[in-house]
Image (tube, rainbow, N blue to C red; front, side, top):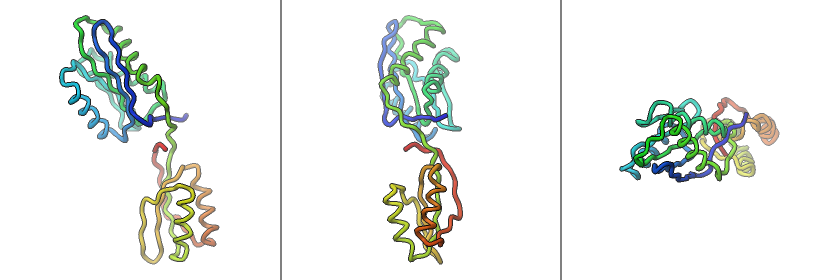
Length: 203
């Protein structure tokens, strides 16, 4: 199943029985980046009663009710992210308590509605598994390989020079085998591919 991320932050604000709920969702690379964004949010709303959040970022997911009754804030936010098949996304809801208690069911609905409202107008970008491809070629073939990478829009992420030239690029994992074949042809069979690994990135 494909997963998606956000190209840019989105936000929405709801008032529910005198409480203000300010919801935002944003793309993040990992948990460390999410924690930085959460601190910025807390700094921007020092008088807020709660800043509840959920993060889906591969193996670095998490959530917090931030003082709300257990299971009434972080998990509902997380479920909305899962429902939209999002990953690499932090969703947070800032609550200013208005004096009227909502009860557990009311809180679940409020946090669900708040983050769903923020995501409603959002554009989604499919996350595509990217592969790192290391290409080893003779010096005579370097310019030809670099030109081909540039034409394909594949970034050069590393290079090294010894007996041969080593160039590393990132490309969609599904294009890796075809790229190897093409580069072998370009170099008249002299290109070698000593290592690869796959990461999950969005493009």
